[in-house]
Image (cartoon, rainbow, N blue to C red):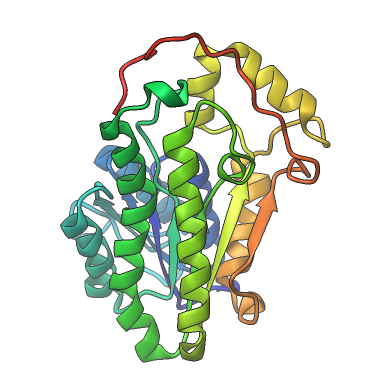
Amino acid sequence: MGRLGGRVAVVTGAGDGIGRAIARRLAAEGASVVAGDIDGEAAERVAAEITAGGGAGDGDGGNGGRSGANGSGQALAVRADVRDKDQVVGLVDAARQRFGTVDILVNNAWGGGALGRLEHKTDQLMAHGLQVAYFGPFWAMQAAFPLMRAQGRGNIVNLCSLNGVNAHVGTAEYNCAKEALRALTRTAAREWAPYGIVANAVCPAAKTAAFRAVADGHPQIAAMADATNPMGRLGDPDDDVAPVVVFLATDDARYLTGNTLFVDGGAHINGSPWAPDLPDGPGPAQG
């Protein structure tokens, strides 16, 4: 059954990139996974991959999802926009209804930022960043808390970013939201420790779909990211980032809480430079 046999995990932004890698790795360790994503079809694909990998047949998972027939490879797909509190609460409740509880919560969802100078950031874009990367996790954590408290344990992993720690240029909405999420993570770790709930942040450096979208428009960024990384490359979501998140979701990490783990090939040690040449002007559509 693996290290997470019998556990239930909720992963936001599970349809692609790091979220997909995490969902698959958690399932490989025996967890039943609820894959939440604003792209319902992408969530369905990940759920199908999990059930196929677990050797289970398709079933009626509810909410448009799939469920496996045995203890390994069980998955449920749920379309959820983390900007909407009702949908976030509904995602957690779907896990409770289908699998009985939530043991592991991974807040990973992001999308909709725009590379541009600070003076051109709009109120709408800044609010969008906070909705996706701060309020979404906040609502999910509040929804999962009663379930975790009742069972005397829980593992929360929030995906943050070195962008915020180093205040990289061009991504103010992302930086601010991710640093707010780190503060929320540490506060939860302190307040919820008596209930056996641990909360940690992971700041990854990996070539995801979101990174590729930025790099396509600014190819110098991709070259810079590899060249300035101490290991000479950005990480792989499946092989470099997901295993660390799985560790934080296991009982091996039950005494580790309130920490930030930089899964970045050492980029944080001296501060990885992020200084694309940003032209004056509002840039692409924002929000």
